[in-house]
Length: 340
Image (cartoon, rainbow, N blue to C red; front, side):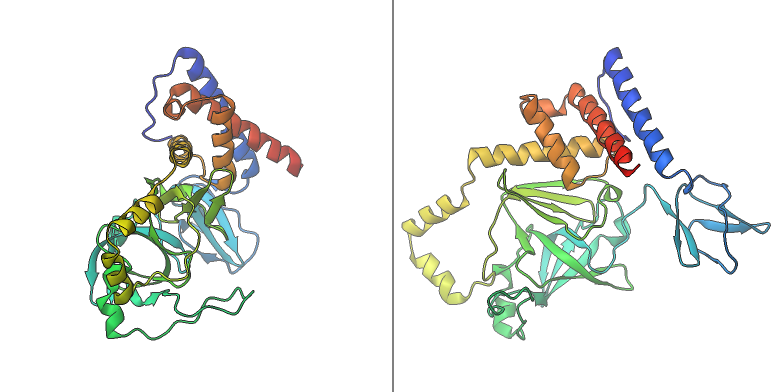
């Protein structure tokens, strides 16, 4: 709940404090044996353990040097901090903005919301899916990639240009602190018709699925591991993202009719825009309260606003923050009871 400034009346303050205390007690019960603060002793159950990050040997006793949760992997013991900077890992889904079209690559900036030492990355032309060849029908394998030519390099701006928002996957990290990205399938690429949100990266947990299609709202939701979240109109996967010269000339020669077609295609219905804003405000509320931003909690928050018939701007009011905190406390309490 850092940087949360709300004008709460006395009743709302009591309700919010009660909900947060309940959440804290549920969290402490579930992690009673693993939560530590600075200088706390970490129990050792076997010999030959390896001291990892956040631990130190003090007079033969293993103590914690940071606040967090004790994690054990075989004989390795380390402390995972609760609030930490984003550390890129291979396979992470991230979102960034193109600042330069360089030879055979695009340079992205502002990739990470907190870790400013990793705010430069690049995406090579050879690592971008072009869609020229398709996989066999019914196959889930990614389409094969062809070798890029000088013509592809000349047409790089037809794929991504300056100020474009791009969703990609972390391929590797470089010694200078930059990252190498890749977009080898149709689910990656340029993001349009939506909102970009910046939240603390530790609120986005690594999961098997970071791409979500909310069918009931017609919305695509991308939870970037770097703390960038995209909420936009649902877009069907396209066969190609590379436009050749002949197609560009055909569009230019189409005249006014082509322009009208493009305007119709780029139009976003008002209902979809409202859904985008409603889901974005739900994420803002969850982020301000310090709750994990996961699909289940987001949808429950949106349903709560619809049930109460709240306008989009009313979701950022003090009362709704309190209601969301109480709802999350009830959800976690029911989950803990089910486990028992």
